[in-house]
Image 1 (cartoon, rainbow, N blue to C red):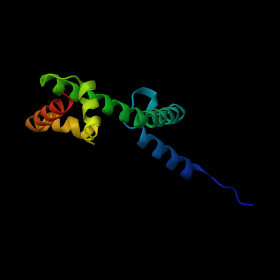
Image 2: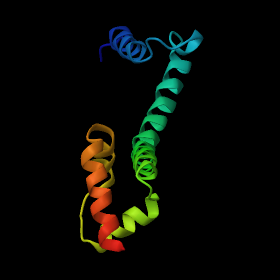
Image 3: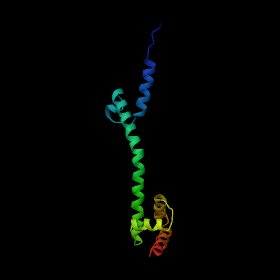
Image 4: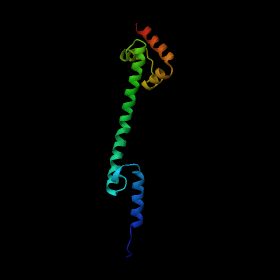
Length: 118
């Protein structure tokens, strides 16, 4: 049986590995073992952070809605309860965009909800 030399395959594998670690510091970019560990760890962080990103954005939307509500003399919790009671189905993302980009429309929404709850 003929002997198989694996230099070409190994070189290709290492080249692909180093392409993924481009921009990393020290041995993590140019030592095979460390680069491989760095890629595995980066993948774990990427997986976890794709999930935490959703939490972070929801928290940001709540903060933005609360700030806009307080400018109109109402708190976030009271505002959200009033929206539910009046069967206004707007999610937090839309509400935060409305508060940021269309402050006048958001103010009218808050006033409409205030009148309905009182």
